[in-house]
Image (tube, rainbow, N blue to C red; front, side, top):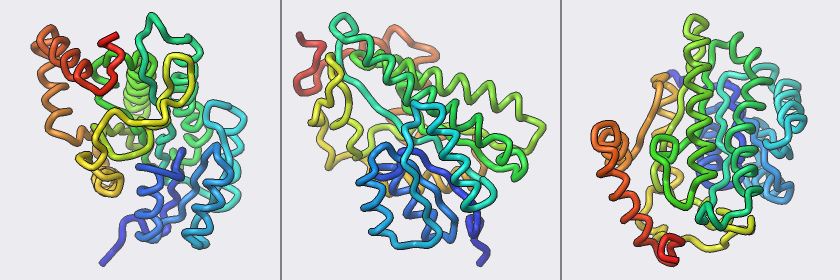
Length: 271
């Protein structure tokens, strides 16, 4: 049986944990050549040792730094000579009331979630145009609906989706597919590393992670979407309902979203 991803070159940012790591493992199993980046050199070394696969390239890079993104693309090209798929997965969340948050938290959210996507896409685009490949952004329902105590996160995801939608239309006649994915709540460490009002990782999650979609299931859905060259994917019933209802009943959805997040353990909305 022909494998669509055999020998495809896939770049994944922020790929040493969660959805990114699950994607990398799945792509490698399908015979793809995979280049991943992360800020954490130790995590990269551990992942490389764990996989022990000649088709895996690990690169230390901070996607909020334009020069790092440029070098990541260059090293990937030097190793694999082309790019078929770019997955902008690196991201950071936050959890704090805007009136209390240090503005550097919002800037960091934009630098990683939005600018990281822009930088990597800019330098990868010439190669993706040649391969008529795919550009992805791992977004969130927060990119469709502003979420309380996540002003920086929602802003960055709205910006990401606006950028990708504009790019999609620009590239309409080129054969390049541009898509974004909104996974809903997935069991990853993004909530543990979410920034609090002062910019420190909150180090704990307000959710019962055991009841959430696994990163592996999420990765499988994303990979099927790439093969089918979808425009967008909203994974959960709750997410689809939120996006649909927000178009027609925005005031009602505002109240429901407030209620949902006010009921989180130690919700900032209660303070």
